[in-house]
Amino acid sequence: MNPDKSASTRHKLYDYIRLADDKKLNAIYSLLEGEIEEASEWWKDKGFVDELDRRYKALESGSDEGFTVEELKASIGKLRIKRYGK
Image (tube, rainbow, N blue to C red; front, side, top):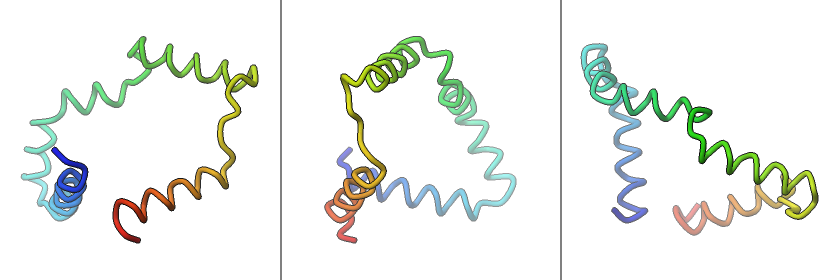
């Protein structure tokens, strides 16, 4: 799926879930419950935790300088304009 289609689908789902009645909301949650629980327990994913540890050590040692908050905000702004035109 291309990024524009994904973004459009995501927004439609947000809107639908935001306005859904309790019965529909419970049905959607039941359908996705297993996946939601897996995604929320990131600390059980050894590969992900190892990657976080590696990146943290690189920042602490200075081998990765990271980004300032200002650089990050500027980057997000550029990506937002590129993707959404705003």
